[in-house]
Image (cartoon, rainbow over all chains, first blue to last red; front, side):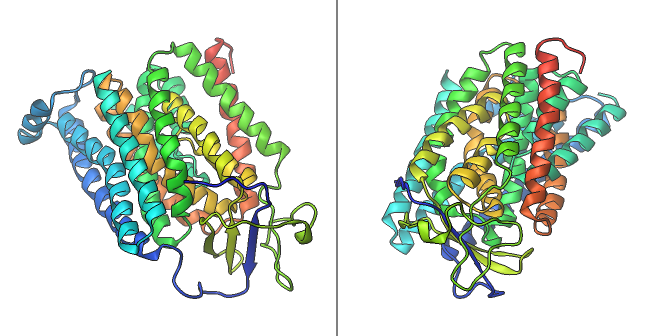
Length: 135
Length: 295
């Protein structure tokens, strides 16, 4: 996946103002940037709404997390804490989606090495979430 | 929570977002001490809240930096596999440690990194091309260009530096060693809620030879992929306060967007100095809390 090198680094700057030609991995950057922009907006919206509701009511739950069913019913009845937790869940879902997007993009480019690397990142993320919830 | 407390949390989060985005640290290194020391939250709740804020900060910063080309995607993916595993281990360790241990470990980490940055303030070594010029604040590599050879790791990076007005190209070195250290960064991230950029940035800059701006952008992207592993551990154990989490996430988001704009205009030397000063101050506060000393 990665190689070790005992040679020095190379960092050079040239006088050219714009980047000549397409930047490295441009075809991967575009979908990733779009996913990140959309995901951040989707996560922030319920958090902001939940915060307003919590501030308006003067209280916001604390402590144990609700079950998935409890979270959904809380969101349905406009509970501020549930909305905030929904937004947090969206944020925590974005990293695996990023890895998946990178995997698909590198596969389309025919770059097996970094498609495999993206898959490894995705698998480790899934394992991490599973271990966190079952332990 | 009073409106005054809510304002204090929001202001702290904006400040953390600006710094986290500018330095590639994720904001947790400011959020966690302030939530625990200044606002009196249990440190485990502060770490859990900090990790959520770190994820949000890194995601919002990466949305801009991935598009700008500063992020080295291949290097980030290579380092993220082990960093995520480390963050999971760190989350499991952190939730089982006492508060005093967390304060002491936090202080030790900040002190160690600040010393490293002060001892090696020159940062990345730059090899100017024949007839070319180095970046405005990057010194030549020790030994000169003639002593350096390169091996393509498939992770070469290139970005436009708006400060120098030029394109910077680089070839990361010692990626294997950097990968091993990234596991440590993940453990620290999951244990202390600091994102991991606190280790990733110096490792990429000083050891892998990645220019500071690319290192901070790549670090933010790595954090956006990996910090969730530690966050879900704290969240699964109930170490989260929805109101404070919402205030910090939104505050960090606002601050991060401002910080991303600042970082385009600031020279790397300023980032390194700011990095060191902030770490020394935060280390003294955390040691004070760990050993009940008046700081």
